[in-house]
Length: 253
Ligand SMILES: C[S@@+](CC[C@H](N)C(=O)[O-])C[C@H]1O[C@@H](n2cnc3c(N)ncnc32)[C@H](O)[C@@H]1O
Image (tube, rainbow, N blue to C red; front, side, top):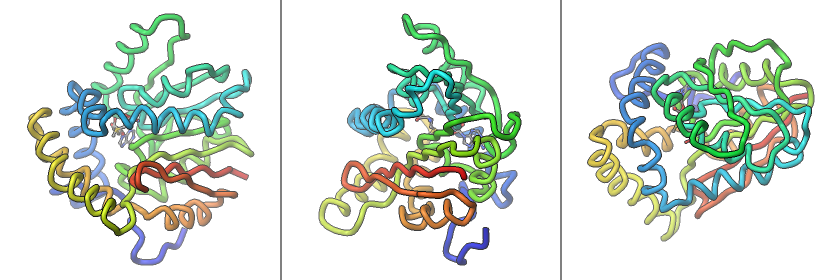
């Protein structure tokens, strides 16, 4: 993929100067905030995060209803998107993340859930997945892809593990368009959210990183272009909550 200069190449937390350091910073950061991650997600989004994941599952229902489908939820964290996908699904769902502590929480939640078949949660780096090519009918990621140290490599790795005609679905924060509501939202994300997040998690750097990483990430149309350049077809997106969250869906040929 040859991108215009302005496109981001990958996440770059403060203090990281190489992609390896970026990955390590990100993993350590999520490992530190894991105990308060769910609480802060629900609190800082006023519970909207549940709706964003439910909407994602709804958009993907055709593949989720197939009993022969295998789904990978990448950067699954504490498992909330995997659980939302599993609700009413017939497909088999697997979660993967490179933070052990986030996965421990996901497993605890899976064990506590009554009725549903337990989801396997595996430790894996999204840039070097331990799966054979053509393994999955759907690969999802909620609020995880933006943290990858190399976006092109991430899209290519997902492409590799998807079966032909498989679907990629990336749910991410994005900068809302200018205007009164967008500006108010930006003020909240850049000023209020880092303070509350830092205070409750005890990790101000992690919640200062969040708005910065969103500002660095692709705008929705740019991400469509990035998907197309890697070879995905029919890329499209749905915006939610004042245009602050985008769900991109595309197909692997
Ligand atoms: C903001 S959390 C999202 C968790 C979950 N998907 C959700 O919806 O709440 C981002 C997750 O991405 C994971 N992550 C970031 N980079 C990763 C990578 N290269 N490989 C695997 N997981 C990664 C982090 O460990 C973290 O658990």
